Image (tube, rainbow, N blue to C red):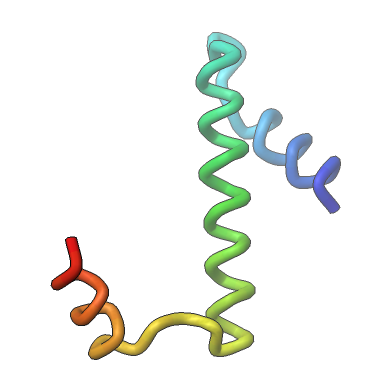
Length: 57
């Protein structure tokens, strides 16, 4: 799965993309996929939990 994701992301970037652009795009995509998985599994925070966490900042 990771190999396919990396190939998809890199193929979507322009030929002028730098190595940093590629790394950033892959990292962003992985985090999005992780968030979607957590959302489907109801592993996220409720609004109330998030607000409580933010008070600690």
